[in-house]
Image 1 (cartoon, rainbow over the protein chains, first blue to last red):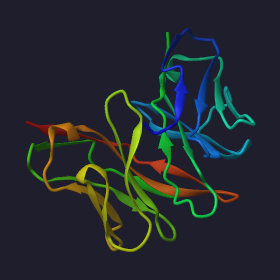
Image 2 (tube, rainbow over the protein chains, first blue to last red; image 1 turned 135 degrees about the horizontal axis):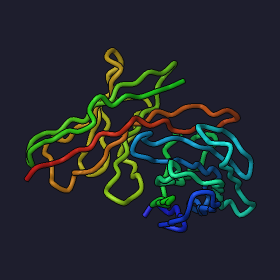
Image 3 (cartoon, each protein chain N blue to C red; image 1 turned 180 degrees about the vertical axis):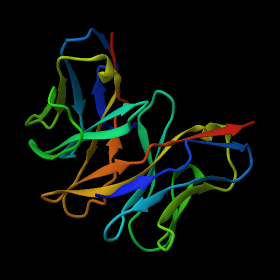
Length: 115
Length: 116
């Protein structure tokens, strides 16, 4: 158990809909990362937050957005869903800051199926 | 940008034989390299990392990795494979995101199958 909690574990929805994925980082970790894993694209970095502020953006679509709340949990919002958005979405956390060597701790993922 | 490449989509090895999963890297400066494992329907689990020091790094579950600067490689190894080692293995490199933050860039992954 990594200590990172993601909900829901599975989600099935229709094209055009909007969903929200939730992540609670490990206790004490200030950084949250979102990754998308699909068969054709592999593991793609989407976005990173540190203590409530956006720090880095990767291959995140404009239809997707995220935020990190004062209690450090994070949400990834996916809107106007398309079939190609079906994937496993991972959240990861790390302590970051001075002394951190960069390893991330991953949750179990949220599997999104768009029909 | 930093990157890693895993040249093999799949590796098959017989139980009890040594295994190697390959990774090469392309970075500017000194690389921070990682190996993760993903079991079916699970998240990624950290196996080991190279930051500096000894070129042979030991990690979880009997795995080790050899850092080779001249060949820009960071291959994952285990002396004797177990059926339970069958999983998807990812090599990753740390990238600076700015403002003291980092993220990991992953390779495409290599599926390891250990045959009984």
